[in-house]
Picture 1: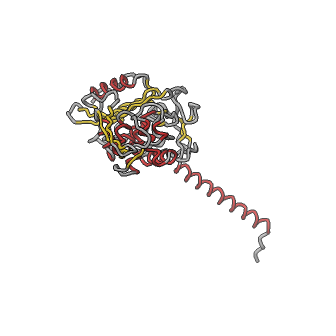
Picture 2 (picture 1 turned 120 degrees about the vertical axis):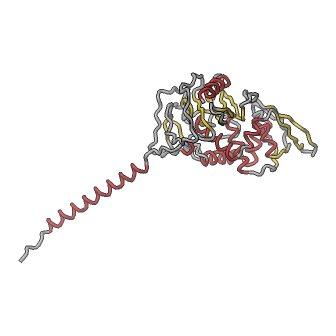
Picture 3 (picture 1 turned 30 degrees about the vertical axis):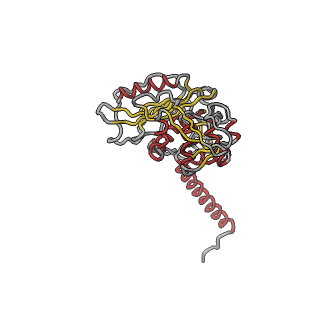
Length: 360
């Protein structure tokens, strides 16, 4: 005859089972968390980060060299459309995710030592293959000044038909800086207003576009567009670039340039022109013609294929330039050179261009 089990014995076994399943559940949760939070190294044209754990190393970048959205010089924030700085990413000065090279698209450089340049950050890369040829702090967040207008143009083209009439607002015509000489109430199409926006970098043109939606709403659209094309370390508060809170990285601007080239090349085509004339309709119905000249410093180079410059005190000189050059095998290469935080962006770009032409 078997002896009945005591209540104490049953309780001990029950507690053991509970503890066992608790350990199993904790182990399973930890494994799943670690798997989900790992930084994913992808091709340079499709880089993704998990913001919870992807802290990029900052190798002693100064507060002048590595500005951030909060002004501390230590942490960059990838903000949502509402501007909440809820995703933390430490600035990086030398980090680049691995490039998954395809043998038929990438090349081995004859010279892997790019020249020293003054710029706080830069990137030299292939627009077609995605190959990064050289970089310096290309993931450091900085103010970008009027390079912002490339995103303004892209957002407008994605949001409105090109024949939509844009009216110059009072806010726009009273804006600070370079002007298209717009008068209050004058009208021109979206396609036409891109010329003063991109050629002469007119701030009244930028504000007229954003005022069509409302300034805050248009900034939201700019940030939404940035996220769509993977500009994870960029944030915009207005369309002109006058604000130091319009920030990005050399690498994000490269992604923007590639997207424009592949999807809205008309933007680069406009920036190649020496000048452009548009017809404005005044409030009384009469018309006048205005001509806008290209102010990009390198527009006269034979290899030049478009770009955008900028300057405010907080950003120093900023410049993106695209070129078409030939490599040693006479293959045409579309190259982007992005220079941020420079005291001489023209000289820096020319030095990098000379190097890559020889290296290819």
